[in-house]
Length: 76
Image 1 (cartoon, helix red, strand yellow):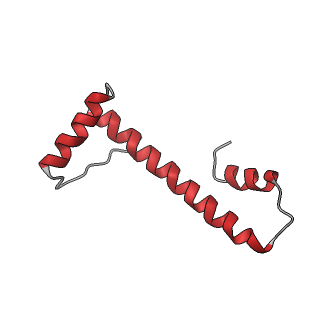
Image 2: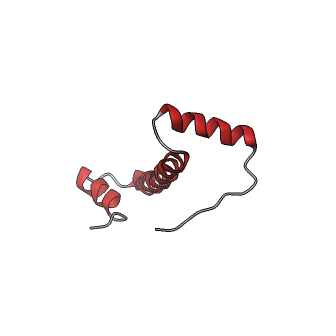
């Protein structure tokens, strides 16, 4: 795994993130890791939506085409 360090985070932001982590029963590190992973996955979904939206002129795509596009970036 890779370590990520973030500098210059305002104290009030750090405190709010720590409170959110505590509310979930997580350490701040675990909470932030979940946030980063969720954001990365969301970015993949945005790319998928962008790709599928270019198919508007096509009328012959199927749900299998959409699922194949979704799975293209996923590890086997």
